[in-house]
Length: 337
Ligand code: NAP
Image 1 (cartoon, rainbow, N blue to C red):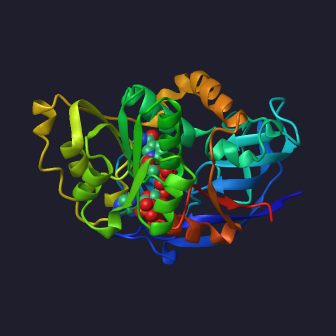
Image 2 (image 1 turned 90 degrees about the horizontal axis):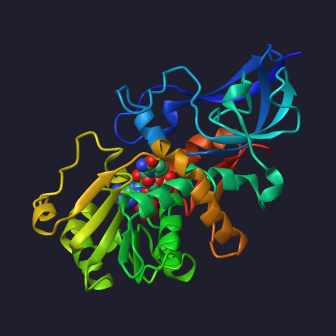
């Protein structure tokens, strides 16, 4: 017996900002699982900035999406049929076959998660998944943040940023400053996400706004956006300061590479360290991350925010909305209704 499943395909490669025309909804008939395979009904999927890079036909740390093929990405689903001893119907699994109603693949591509341990399985796509690990590794290992320091986070109301600021505070940062792209987000940064100060980068140049929010300078910059924010942060960093280069979303939809910082020589005079990282290289830190962040979560010390859109057919709009900044916290698409 086959299963009808819808999927979102890459219809064409965008140049600059993607549009709805770059996506196509298609329906496929999936056969029963072959030996070793399982069929998973997806419950929720993630839309992430890195997917924009995969829409370009360029060599990167993950291969590009192919035109005419279904997109992939993080998702949580429930096993509905299994032809593998590794998984049984009812198991809840985390995997990379998002952007579709049903995933049919070898059981090795799915990892069981404990749906009873969390208020919602969405946590495995945000605070307890790669997003939380990115924020934690960036702060703890890459920036080596120490208690008493001043930390600046850009993209601060987003999935990674809203957690990075809270983790910094919980690890004893003296002052945590965030930037985001709307008045509402700026309000939430201090009211909900524990930031000490925040500003809207769309209100004016970053450098004077950062100076007002951190008059004595910063020790750590958690960079989610690159561009002008990075230049301003190099100016604000104190001697021995560190930059965790997590993302550069301000340039992801540009057709020309944005200009680089014109003040890199400050790395020499101020003995600064700038280090890029990819979360995939740091999964060995999962046990320590889960011990610390799981503890904070259980104690109610972390505010986890999500922007959830309903329906697979809305996934492209959710993705485009996230690139435009319509999300607060993790951008997700619910698929089970
Ligand atoms: P997110 O912050 O939840 O969503 C993206 C946000 O980027 C939007 O909400 C928007 O917020 C902001 N943005 C869009 N254009 C911008 C611009 N020109 N200038 C400043 N901000 C802009 O996404 P996320 O998943 O947490 O990812 C955040 C960053 O981390 C991205 O750069 C991503 O590529 C990176 N990342 C890296 C790793 C890694 O392993 N290194 C892993 C995950 C994510 P505003 O309303 O504030 O503009």
